[in-house]
Amino acid sequence: MNSSAHRKELGEFLKARRAELSPRTVGLPEADRRRRAAGLRRDEVAVLAGISTSHYTRLEQGRTTTSASVLSELVRVLHLSDDHRDRLFELAGREPGGARRRAPQKAHPRLRTVLNELSLAPGMILSRHLDMLAWNPMAAALLGTDFAKVPGPERNYVRRLFTDPAMRALYADWEDSARNAVAVLRQQAAACCDDRRLTALVGDLSVRDDQFRQWWGGRHVPPRTGGTKVLNHPVAGELTLAWDALTCVADPDQKLIVWSAEPGSRTYDGLRFLASWSTTRTMNS
Image (cartoon, rainbow, N blue to C red; front, top):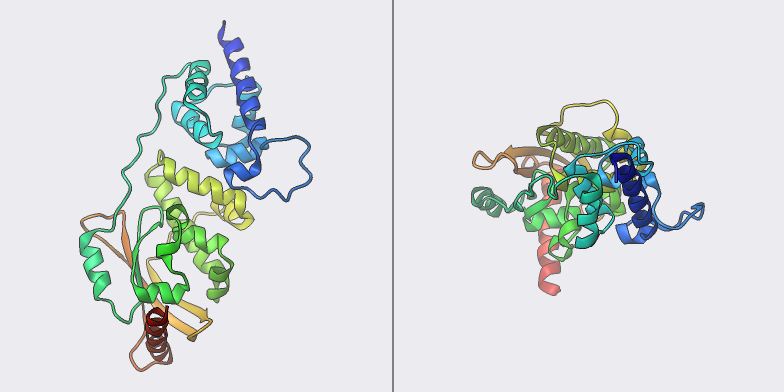
């Protein structure tokens, strides 16, 4: 079989696997009744795999080949079995493999020590992907979520910003916070272009949210590491909080985010009330 025939068979293979998947299988809403055929659309597969729609279309049409790392993403997106994975790489003329997986991050002990010392200031430790590695009770009370009960893949700050209606309502200027989160992810993507975990997160959010997709592909702006946020908390009322992102010297890929208020200010009193309310609720639960 010549290379052209291999590419054509590769395209047919991808098309068949795509048709076998429902939107629900990959976490997409199924409310779109305009679908003309069963399965995922080409653009959905492309976005989830972190590649352009035109590149994926050429793959299905047998007009191009691709890298092992892209094939590995297609294995994940299309939920391929081991046998199908081997067949995919065989048709593409590639050795199975791709980008190396990084070990899951854990909160660094030094940052966790500092976090545990924060009694009134909300704080949390975020990974390179903005996963929430650790948080204190005040952060849970401020963001209105018991993160210990949130499944691991959903315990991601930027994911919750874009998919949790309560988080959108909490931030008075949600767009500013969301744009900065996108800038942080883009900076990480530029530093680690083969990060499969980050590619999957960006692909998923691009499919789920039009604003995320627009900002990800828009003008690049540097992320901020501090500033002021106004939160409309349902219990403590309006809170104007200073925030800082403190980098761990021993592990620069994770940061401690701390919200604070000037002692004696209305927001400081609001945090004290929130701490008391959270403690009472915990004792009564």
